[in-house]
Length: 292
Image (cartoon, rainbow, N blue to C red):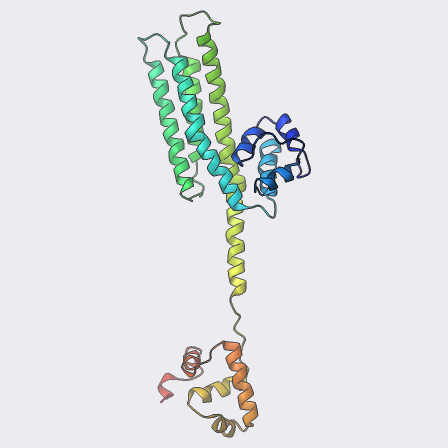
């Protein structure tokens, strides 16, 4: 497991996926001997969130940090979206064209392979636009359907692509092998991207929503229960009696009446007679028809 105190250069040197992770967090090369925490701090990246992604990718560690930062995680995923749509997929399409077009012109297989690839890209574009709109809800079989299209493209090339007329060790053959490797890595990269959404982002969002709900619930003022004597005083207040009249009716002192009225106001956070009247009616302390 990588820790905040580990040197980030060692992470980048030993882990194949580290360069992609670092770029998607907006980090750069030239890190020297700095630790992961130092580099993250200098770029405004939340270190526990960075480590959550790194350790998930490298060790499949799914334990969600207690203080994961959802905005940082969303920025990471949006940067990954930009990478897929603006760089990796267009570049892979150009490589695919370069590798398969030299096939026998009479066959339609290269065109069908390219059409299948374009359908795959549109699937990813729709998936990403949906997420960029803030809708990260899980759609069953959505990710599997997208990655299965890449598997289909690989199988079309492996099973049906016509062998080039050039010798086996020609540059065309090398290009095709390179494209197959790129297809494989793109499939794995996108599958990992979807897994991060499912196993880290969505649980973090759920936790954030739950925490927000708890905070909102906790800040709502609790209405203290009125004592029976306070209810008696409230009823007389609602009926329009003065403090002196209430004291006479309830056989208590004026001072006690004033004290009860202060407690009623504090507990209910209601300061007007009209508001107290509504409270008394709603809580069935008085009958609306009995009020003048």
